[in-house]
Length: 256
Image (tube, rainbow, N blue to C red; front, side):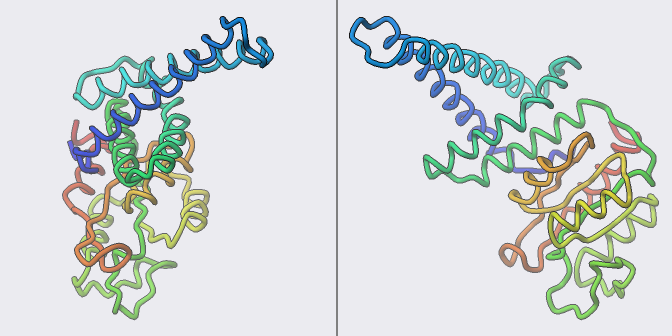
């Protein structure tokens, strides 16, 4: 399957999850030690609350860790596990980002792995919709930077010169009869989603925008495809067109 974000990020994601479990276990152990100490000054009820909270969160994260490892190893997970992970993953992700910020780690590796994990979760759910119920959201940096034709408000303003991937993406739109829009940011993306009312979204973006978009959209399946940046971020980016087409075919039930 097309699961696009770089696989080497998975190891970083797993290690950070382990670190998160270790952190809360450590907090629980310190609280337990202080509760049992005869020389503590802090109020024991507060320490007990910290102990119970840290223990609960440790178990919560550890359960998700087991499911994440199974999912990344391409193993089947139950519908209950999918619902659990779908509910809890976004909360855990936010804590992981805070942890990477604290430890000065590369947040994009966590963001990329989060997008891949979300993709695998969607694929394992076997969600199928009609082509016209699919919305493909593109970043404006896919358009050639020297192009004078504004396609943000109307993708059909593209003159189909073939100098960027917009031409081939419009071809896919015409072939499958999906919705295709270019969004310059989260506000416009939300406006488009509200107007189109899709049942599935294919989003092309960088790690940061993909992860924030997945977090932002609720109750809609979103499959993210990382853009390619041969000239650096935010300028003349590309996208793997085969990944986009395979994702369309998955959503309409042509590919399992």
